[in-house]
Structure formats: structure tokens, C-alpha cells
Image (cartoon, rainbow over all chains, first blue to last red; front, side, top):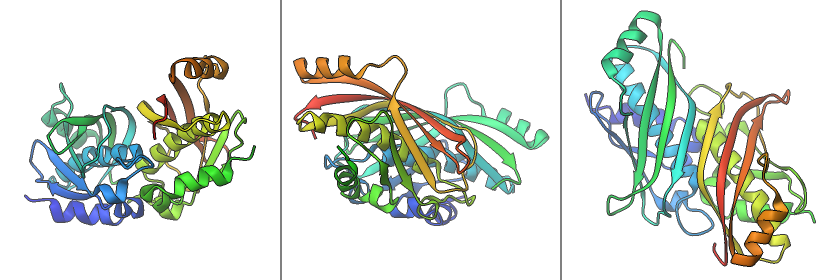
Length: 152
Length: 152
């Protein structure tokens, strides 16, 4: 299922995210990778490149959105909460922001979903990155999320 | 020297930071701690508490601002760039955002300033946190910054 409209609705409802104009580029509920985008103009810093907080935000939201769409497809009113994250800023970005997220290496969705189905809670680690116009990563994020049934 | 007007000018010039309404609460150029604040209303998420990206942003900016004010007081047109950061989200925040930053344990400003003065570049690690209305930390950040003369 194409989850773009669903995810865009969630994103637009958060004032700081709406201000950063973060929107869904590709967000199928069963896709391996979720992609978000945002214009540089709404996310520029004092050096005419992308603000680090915007890079951290769009990568966190890409990981969060991936999990929210997966749980929504299972029919759950789920809460997905970021627990911690590590961000590396590799190079300045002078292009629009394009972020993609996927499950981190070693994570298995079937296992996470089974834990969540049985206990109403689980943890998942997501990897995300922001790419420049040439497809080179300018920032990376690894983040752990808590999934809680009925939360949110 | 009170650096509030200076720092508020830098913050307001960044569109995503202006949208989050992040402003200086205390920002002396020689103070141990710098404090920033932002209203919850401009930084709320889908769960009626503070958006994780806003928490990461205000903590990153508090560390960045501390270094920018120190270098400015030395008369330098400096560029301060975040290199990497680790954020822990400890509890949801239903109050306005209050962030404070200081040099991380084990860091010595005189040593950093001497390196920077001699080579035009140095690294500094900052610790920041966001406190709730009771003064309890709801998020923490440790971040490394690169200081480059003439950058920015």
C-alpha cells in the first residue's frame, strides 16, 4: 500500500516538521526503504547549507515513519518513540534534503513484529542517511525506537 | 559580555531555527553555561509533547552557540561545525523547551583556544541537555564540533 498520504498527514500535523516542509517521496507500507524530502530553503543555516538539526530531524522522521507505516499496515494504533540516536555529519549539503531509512543491519522485521504482536511492545533499530544530488551520503543516523501498542 | 543579542541574531537568520522560535535565555560570552529556550507550541509532535528533532536541534544549537560566542569574544570570524552527536531521549516533555550546554567533562577551553589560535582549527566536545519545568533532564546530547578560522 502507498503510505504517502498517510505519512504526509502525520508529518504536516507537527508544526516544526511542517515548517521544515518535510514530505514523503516514497513510503510504501511494505517497502524496504522509505524516502523523505525537504527543500533547502526551509532548512538552511548560517553557512547557506543545510542546518544540522534539520538533517537530524528528517533522518529521525524517516526511521519513525518507516515503523509507523509498518505497524499501521498491521492495523495497530501504535506509538513509535525514538529512544536514542547517533548522527554523523560528513559534509555540508547545498542541495535539497533527501533522506532514506531502512532497518539497521542485523534487524529482522518478522522478529520485531512477532515480539510486538505478543507483548504489545518491541524495539527496532533504524539506519538513515541524507544524500546529496549526486547520491553521496552527507549525514548518517542510527537510532533505536520503542514501539508501544496504543501509544501515540 | 552579554551575547544574547548577538546569538539571537544568528539564530533568527536560520529559517528552521526561526520556525522553532529558539532564542537565547542566558548567553554571556564567558559564562560556563549557555541556555536557550523555545515554546512547546512551535515544537510539538503527534503526541502533544516536544518533537525529538526540536530537542536535538536546540541542544546542538546550545553547544554551537557557546563556542560561537567564545570565539567571537576573541575577535575571530569563526566557523563552528557539528561533526557528530549522540542524543538520548529520556522522557516526553510537555513543557516549553529549556536547553543548556557546557564544555564536556575533560575538555579545557584554554587548551582548545590555544590550539585554535596557533593552527586556526581545533575540536571541542560539548554536553547539552533539555530540562523540564522541574529541572529534570528529559534529553541529553554529547557532540563534537570543529572550529575553523574564517569559516562560516
